[in-house]
Image (cartoon, rainbow, N blue to C red; front, side):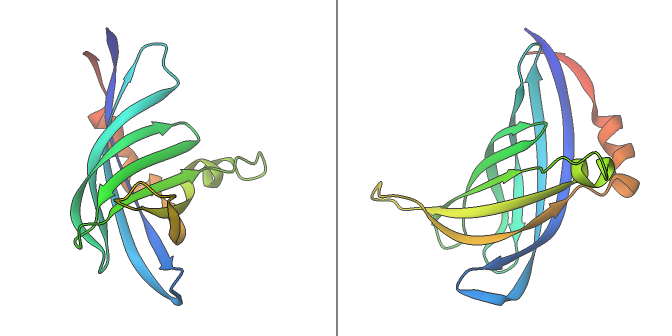
Length: 141
């Protein structure tokens, strides 16, 4: 099946709910593959969250407005990062490049996930748009 492949980097700051006054750096590097006709891409990549996860593998989905990825922290906990863009016509570039995120811990016993962090990731289009566009490739999956 035909589709498109590209890479994207988002960086920003999170705060843990247990320490709301302490901001920590976060970087999410994604490699996305979207099949023709699909509304979202399957993604793999790496996440680094200061003091939580260093270059941890991620897997999930990325849509035009939403992100959902899973990863394992350095301590071995399974976490899920979820984000949704808030589109406004008054600031179209900002609303397409800023992603508010919420991070949840997924307990190993299968009980309900609980929120552990919130923050904002940014796609720096001035710095990273060129590399993202160069990574854009048609592909057959």
